[in-house]
Length: 488
Image 1 (cartoon, one colour):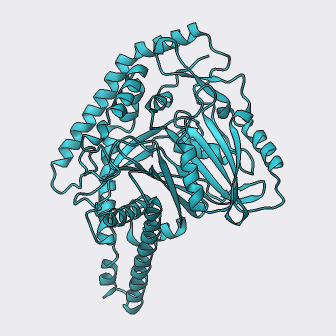
Image 2 (cartoon, helix red, strand yellow; image 1 turned 120 degrees about the vertical axis):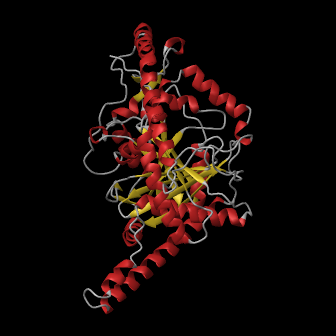
Image 3 (cartoon, helix red, strand yellow; image 1 turned 30 degrees about the vertical axis):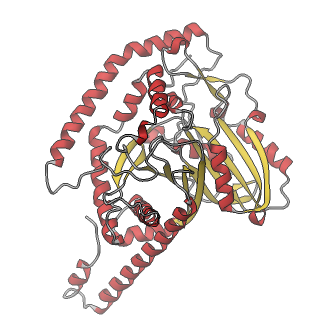
């Protein structure tokens, strides 16, 4: 039985000379001198072999009639995918992040399953690291996070076989037949997608005529920054860590969402970074935020179920509270517009684009360096991936923090990805090293912005508590309640 992989494989054709569509995951493990590398390697091989999705590869459909199909790799051997390296003893986390960016920039062998797993020793204080590198064609951030957690201790989590699997080695005639059948269905599918998107677009335009409506983000209506240009091959990465419970504390005080707070922190750090470079635009930056469109029954699937939402960062506002308030209103509008346009409209159009056309467009766009010639579609990518609810262990070693690294896109040389694990939020900044120099400064500004916003939230909470304590029931309590900064 064959199943065309559709949108999953369409990510494969976005790869170009300088763009690698990888999504990667890092776990920093607390030291345990009793763990020997040989035992660790054997354990990894055993755990990898228990995950069916990691033994599948993509097979091209003859004549490029349709996107490649997922097949079982009958020659699968984890030895081709698991790599080990020992860095200089005492390598810092910042140095590790830079090293991982270089690994992530290298293509994955397309003749095998599209992943690599790195075991890294030599990190400061005796730590080790696990680094799983996946191609976006195999899994999006949510599915990739679930795959990564399967490598850790504990009972195996449930995963679906939904990956377009071909149980037996496919015959070319069967692939051609399935590809042609998929192509014949496309005119009707294209019409359906365009009709839904057109109806949604009309509703959005009508809504935006209301002067009281806070518009969502609009692609190609954002300023140019130093990192909005044609990208090169050099990559850099930096990491930061914050507390999820503290982020939730900020959220509860101001009546916003966790995503609002994270966008506000990204906005504040970008303001500081660009101000230092004397490159802060007068207009607000625009981020594209990947959005999972998985239904509850699809939560265990290994595939791509992702769309995109455009969100303004209001970097033109100097006051942190005014900025957070604006982001809350703006993202609420962006969510409504994303739903109205059709959560699957963008992904549906990508899936229905022909293999040769999609690859040709991507390569031509990169080769001509068009990203440096027009106004940016968006300034950067900001993604928030839900990770495990508890901190994980590997062979008893605690994963003290986990991070995810998203792809750097042509024309938007900066990606910020957040991954939760227990009460820890791991933040990864991944960028074109030339377009975004001194990336560690951006990570430092993110942590500073977090501390500032937390101080403001706690001050507001303390002030409110004091007013309520001093006020008699009723009477002035209404005035006290009016001071609660709910951003409706």
